[in-house]
Image (tube, rainbow, N blue to C red; front, side):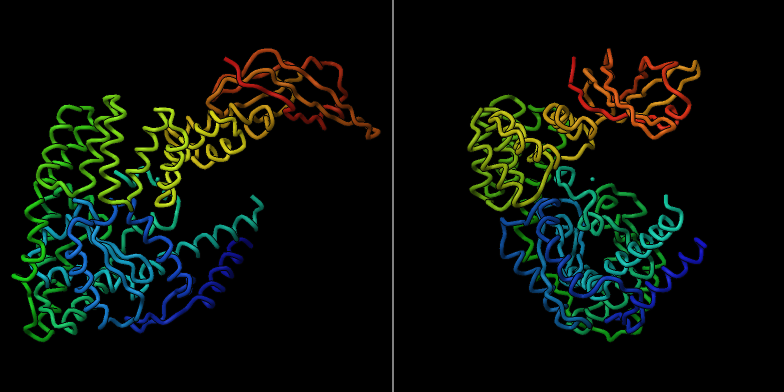
Amino acid sequence: MVKRQLFLWTMLALLAGCAVNPVTGKNELSLVSEQQELAIGAQQYAPARQSQGGDYGVDQELTAYVSQVGQRLAAVSDRKLPYEFKVLNSSVPNAWALPGGKISINRGMLTELQSEAELAAVLGHEIVHAAARHSAQSMSTGMLLQAGALGTAVATQGTSYANLAQMGAGVGAKLLSQKYGRDAERESDLYGMQYMVRAGYDPQGAVDLQRTFVKLAEGKQQDWISGLFASHPPSRERLQDNIALLATLPKGGELGVERYRAKIAHLLRTKPAYEAYDEGRKALKEDSRWKARQLAQKAIDLEPREAHFYALMGDVEQKDKQLKEAVIQYDKATSLNPGFFYYYLQRGKVREQMNLGALAKSDLERSLELLPTGDAYYSLGNLARKDGRVNDAKAYYAKVGNHGELGQQAYGSLVDLDLKENPAKYLNARAGQDAQGRIVAQINNPTPRNVGGIVLLVQCRNESGKVLKLQKTLKGKVAAGGQQMFDLGLTGQLTPEQLRTLQVAIARAEVVD
């Protein structure tokens, strides 16, 4: 019966969800409509960029150039979409595409490329992922699997900046972290090279690029493994396929070596500044504050227009408890780049420590507008709690979630405020007879707080249906994350029928030391 229902679910999904791939012309599973696809891309593009370091803003001409190359390729693609191209402020060599043609390439990728044709190869590859609906196909497959799981349940009745972002369970994070299948990568290579030819680029650039990728992958260079290779794994098979395809394509086209080198000249000149910044971030993570300060200053000296560098200095000052100096550094960062969440988040947290509640609240709310983070919700919860706005505080703490150290802190704060009003929301109780014949209640306390002062409502029925209701105050406490058995003192007082219908519910509880 279960297998039959699963089969019916699958067949219904397949019949309802077949669509023609606009690039390949093949019939493929598609449970995500084009309207949904466009909406997902539009909604997730900005927060995804924020979580990956934000837009690179020091050299606006570079972003305009990358966009120009991207639009040149998009114009000859098989699917017209509202394509966008952004350069992200990250040293990790990476590029990605969201549904609906929302494409980004990292600063760290641009410094590794050798020509405009290689840039066109990267962007063309990503354009195909968007045009051929590869992300939407992955989502459709996931939806189909979920539908099958739902059918089974009915039949049987039975988480850098990305670490801060609350995208762990969201569509955006899954799309950014997904690993494309071999067929999708082959399609993107195949049609991406064809798009290069249509746009007037030499497809040799794609082969050169793939050859470099294979060499770097075999050398297991960590920055590449954590970047493009995580979602676009290269292989010698792909390289040979591209070489074979190149032999069938028209010869010639632009390589654009000199033009490309001229466009990224400033990026190359300032690469040492970003290397110092990355080393500074690493040093600060290891609590080597003196080294981090030196590296932040080196980065600032080499490129005084980069807001990230001042934010690093602000983080160093914050760790050194130099809060006023930290605010000054974050002020510089926000003035240089007012559109990145991290500067407001950090300044808000410092102002919280300085008891500047209104200013802290404004910064934290601005950071949330740019990118929702557990850190911002937690600090806003603390501010609301301090101001006596208990309901607001509870709402903020609830948004943090309960994963990780910060999540546990927020959950503990939520328990502090809400346990008395809603004890059953946090504690579990059940009753029965133990091996010694005693009538007992087992209280489970999954919270990070010790709980006591527990009052149980006890209810049962006798043979005639009469309801017996009692209140029992339990002595002692239940440790955080633990469970405890309590004797209800009813041994020998209940009939077998009453014992069978015994139920308990938590009426009151409180946090104790």
